[in-house]
Length: 544
Image (tube, rainbow, N blue to C red; front, side):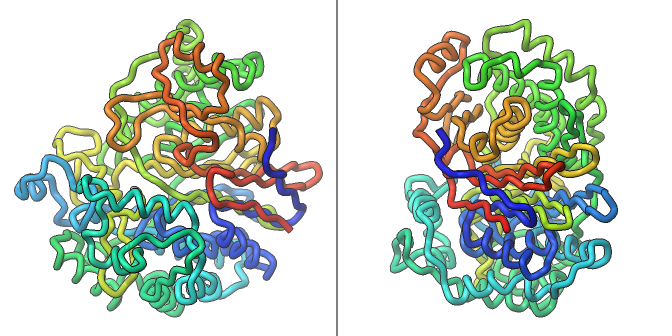
């Protein structure tokens, strides 16, 4: 059963996890803007109207297909740790791990705005951008200053994060600016209530007027750093001045008659591609979709990909990561053979629960395409907002390890392991499937679900997004890895999975835990674009 219709159009197509962001992007396309310009409008808007999941205090990553040059390019828009962020510093303060919240969790420079700026510069020079930078932030500024109706998702995650018994991950009301901005008379905004973020609106307006660089070298920078340091934070003005968003070469593997692309390390794009590289040696079509064998094979494939990921993934400037070997035909084949020969579940050491995100996809009339992802890591990031700025600073750097020989050990000016990874399938050198999801550990898993269901089983985009999902791993505070499945997976299938050795946890239908996925499939013969958005979130696919 399909609950929503797949959106179809012949010109532009947008899918984001919030309907106001989708509307912002489609408005830009209809004004003659391209996919990059529309992505910036959507990204800035969703940072305002979905503030618990992302914002200008976070990071982003881009895959950009340029229809003129027929090239796929990638931007790593993640920030590095501060110049004085060291293991010894945290150890001297008595910490065995980096705090998950507060000023000490905000130890990496927010890369989001620089990512927008880098993409816009490329769009101007190479893609014939027609709209001024300031116009792309107009709707975000309007929603911040004039207000927007709060979503049930924001209400729920605000309530969760007021739990006073958990001062490691929650109790965000202890931060003065968080309470002032995100609480309404000391309680969470209810769904449908109008929320304004005037400080954030003013910050966005200054960035709209002065350009992306203003965030990193101006009075605003000094304001951010001054309040952060006042509360014990580590970032310096020079950390912001030194920040760069980097063009990186996308990594890829063949999948059936397509080529799957993703971002290289420090993202877990390597895990998403590794899964497809293994599945390419398994005749998935011979396995019934939704059967216990389907879930078992996918989950075991994911476990093997995660073993490689967790052994190697960090900033490639600090460690040599054998990407070519990990994504080789031979490596994929050897793992596929192990999975085929073993019908029982493989045990895996505990995975670390990872944070929340927004993914969005855009294809314009010229055939340009963007797969984009943006995040502040945990809901509301560090929970710390520099006074008067409205900027929720991310806590992505809290994922660094304070163990010196750990692959992801903290060091100055280093990028941490990133869960964020936008994806795209190309066929005959042109985008065929633009796809992605939020959800930390779930991103490679849901990407695999979308690809197998759309490419191998021929499901419509919306049908593939809505189909029952799974999540292997653990969530905050869990003491073991479990295989979480939505209750729409039949009892028979669940019993068969348990008999194979999977530790099952049954979640509600369309559980928010499974993330908010989206996808656009392009039929090259007719040029029809098929867009889908996830009913688990507040998203919408809009075409014209």
